[in-house]
Figure 1: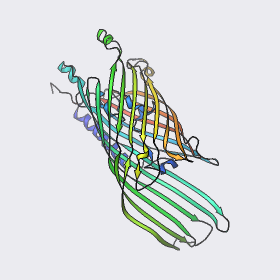
Figure 2: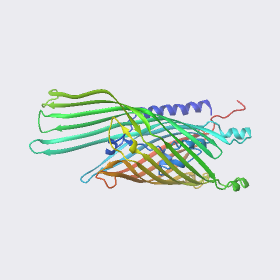
Figure 3: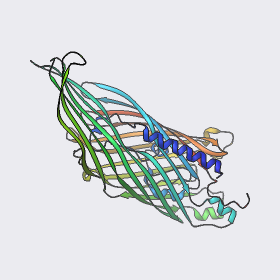
Figure 4: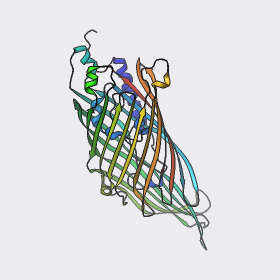
Length: 447
């Protein structure tokens, strides 16, 4: 790749990383009160539009960090940046409320360390390849603002507010080595972030009453990892040898897993009572608890996932994926709460009628679809919450730096909390750009 293009890619990556680091990725869910918040889907926008089927999926042009073994199948350098906008409708037996939020979702760059073009130039066929990835993205998100008003005889109106915000992020460095049709890879990551909670009780009808204000925040840091393997089974190798124009049909089988990992926390607490006497400068404060640098530890859960994908050349694919997470092993000294094991099953695929079509743009597009169903690690009304949803998406090809790249647009509609008193209906619009370049690491014979 030319030096100018390398600088452009690195500049885009740096700007994206800084944007994610300073942006406040948030959720709109009372469920995010427990654990470290709502877990963010590791599937990028292309795979989210297929129901999040990354366990056994490979692509020569798109990044899949769910199973790091996929990097070994990359043919080009890929830079992927995603954003989202989400509408959530929360409802219980008496009321409902709709909320919007959105932000930059992730930034990632992946590349093969040996360019396939070199094989053509050198007239050799290599049986192995090595791929690498760098990714920055949210890991969990906390976001809720719940208010209730009660009226007590002889006391009056009491307002209770519960607010949570913040989350955690992760920076991943991934590597994968592929030999013939077998690939193995690993992601190593650093986890960091800060979470804030507020709990307030106001006695609005009693002047001079002491309102209760509780503020609690803690920072998180630690390391995480996951590893994976993928095997590609050729279904028509003999036919392709006889006729090079025959589309490749194959199945990929994937497995990814990680063990329980630890993290450290540093918490601060401010609990006080405040009495107000009618004017802004007329109040009294009684500090009940003020604690700084309360150190603690925690454990992230172990996880295992597996999946498979059938590919009909470049025209279509269909995938299935299953992930099991042992949330019962989660622990957080800074935010105690009981969680239970969860799972997610999904399936999806894409159709691309004719990527070689010159006179019909719609035939060159990707048409993606997906379905998923799973359980949530948190309880609602003593029952484990469940979630399900459907996805659709489109891959829109365009030319950038004389190379084919794609804009990806997706829609996810789902529901969480089925059978509980608080239910979430949501719709998420996902958008991403995937820029591809095939000139990295070319050994130039002439300058």
